[in-house]
Each structure stands twice: as structure tokens, then as C-alpha cells.
Image (cartoon, rainbow, N blue to C red):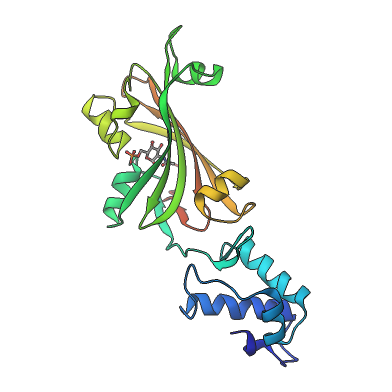
Length: 245
Ligand code: 16G
């Protein structure tokens, strides 16, 4: 790969050509996720460019989520995630979304339990005095790729035993007659902090999507307040727009 860029004097900045060569190698499967990149010095020698050029190309690829740097062990080809197209017009659960796509879903528990609510949770969920909040936080993984971190808060009266959720929160809520029928969802761009980036297996600072979902029961009561971080390189959110009536 690196030799392709050596000795070529035309065609734009060297670091961009090196970057393109590495990106092409990933896209065409010449190198695969988990492969280690040679050292900066070796790449510089093979490609006949300076180490500064190599560093710049690598930095760009890390920021794009194509490579990942692990402290002390080097630079690797990052897991490549096939983009998920997600409709913004139906109120579905993660489990249902993945099942429809034939993807294999696993979740890693980050937290679950009953807690004293924060003032924000008390207000949003309309908690009675002394009522606890059920918090469940999960890393959601599809076909082995971490796609999202979801942190949900529900009234303890709705979810008295957060440990009893199987794989799907919505399936559990369905069982107990608390499945939401409507939700307001807010999406904003954020750059990943270090801890979340590590969980999602991408570089800190990579663009991602912060999603807040407030879900309602038919009675109008808010049943769920969830803050999620979705990988920006893994999702396309799609909405159908119509002329205003
Ligand atoms: C979706 C929802 C999340 C909900 C979860 C339930 C977004 C951004 N989030 O991922 O609010 O808690 O589904 O999924 O869409 P589950 O039934 O698989 O646990």
C-alpha cells in the first residue's frame, strides 16, 4: 500500500495520497479490522515520505474512525461498521430494529438498579416524593460492533426490578402494559468523550449523535427518558417529509 505513494510527484498533497491509499486498502479488504499498521518510521521509509506526512495521514484516518490508536500498542484498522438506516417516523426498540435487519444483537450492561432520582428525573418522570428511579445503561452491539450507548431512566413503579429485563426493555414494558405509544426524539451532533469513545471502540473526538427520547403512555404520562450516544459513522437517520397541510 505504502509503496504506491512513493516517488509520485503529482496529484495533490502527499499526506492526502497516503491517506487515500490506506483508506482504499481498508475498503478493498487488503487490510482488515484488527490489523496493526507498521510503525510510523517503517511507513515513512517504504512510502518515501517524511514521518510528519505519515503522522498527518494517520491522524486524519483516526479522526474518520478508519484507524484506531491504542495507547502503548500502536495503530490498528478499526472495526468497519455497515451503516444502519434508521427511520425517524416509527417508535421501535433497538431489539426490533436489529431483528428486522437480521443483525445479531447483544448488550453489555453498564449499570442497572434503583436509585434516588436526580431533580431532572423527578421532574421529567413526574416521580412522587420518595419514589426511586430505575436506571438501565447498556452498550448495544450489533454483529459484534458496538453501535450505541443507551442510558434510560424510568419510574420505579413502572420498572420495579431493572434486573429482570431480558434483552429488550420495550418487550418488558409490553408485558406490564407500559409500552410507550408516542415519543419525542431530539438529535444533536457531539464529539465523543474519552470514556464513551472507548466503549464504542472509536477515537475520542470522533463525531457522534446524542439522542434524547422521551416516551409517553397513551394516558400522556412519560414512561421513559433515555439519553443515547450513537456512532456517527454507523447511522443514517431518515425521515419522510411532506408539504405542510
Ligand atoms: C431504542 C430507543 C431507546 C429505547 C430502546 C429500547 C433510540 C434513540 N432509543 O434504542 O429509547 O430504550 O430502543 O430497546 O431510538 P430494547 O427494547 O431493545 O431494550
